[in-house]
Image 1 (cartoon, protein in one colour):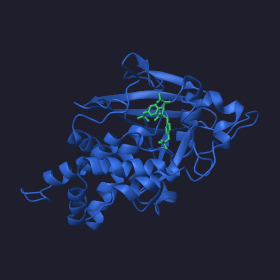
Image 2: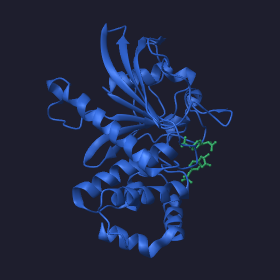
Image 3: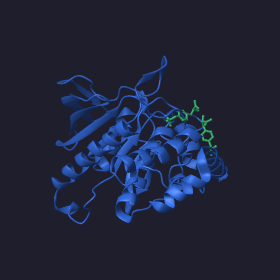
Image 4: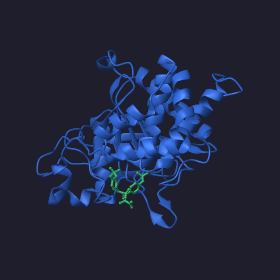
Length: 297
Ligand code: PTR
Ligand code: PTR
């Protein structure tokens, strides 16, 4: 933490913005062939937010389906390979693909950091049944809403997935953070950090209930994290998780290196200088609350 504080002290806000400008200059280190293929265009929410071939999540193609593409990327967490799948807000056309990915990757927790509509614009499809007791069928997956818990800044929904081809079922927890505008930053860092805490507790608890094949993987399968494009808010959320884990484990952290690495896996991660600055600020607020800083800092 002292190194981080010294770094922050040297840079101030404008310096942090400049650091971000430098990060943005770096080109993504891979190719976008699959995302750019003509028959996949309708599977991208935004024509300019594509995923790298090298880290994309491939659907396990079924017969008579041409494409294994979904706009989703594996991303490493702190000391955890593929801790997250960063993805766009599902489109009506891709609801089935989304749930197929959740099933195939054994996902236990879905984190949504956008509302479906913002400022009169559609940001993400309503890809799960909203009401308690509701049920929807997406391709060969039936999703049942078992329970909704509303908290002041987020809602937590327990969903049951029925794979109608395999006649098997699984439980998934859906978390939606409700006060984060796109291109913006949350009004309070601490409410986002509390949200992150709730997400991680659920992931840990769900992993404990998994079968023996997961015993060697204490942190479990990837969490799905999405917003609208799956880069700005998604990237900020994951960067914060990684940096807070670094702080907890090593007593220090490096936002710049973290974001640069993340961008090699999910291209364009973190969209604005303010989101980049927010990561720093949120860590400070957290450190203050934990009593890790003296009053003068
Ligand atoms: N082409 C889009 C646009 O700027 O309108 C791409 C985009 C949309 C990029 C939303 C980022 C966005 O934010 P987030 O990743 O947080 O949903
Ligand atoms: N609509 C987004 C934007 O204008 O920010 C789409 C976009 C995303 C454009 C990333 C360029 C991007 O690349 P970089 O983050 O490397 O500048």
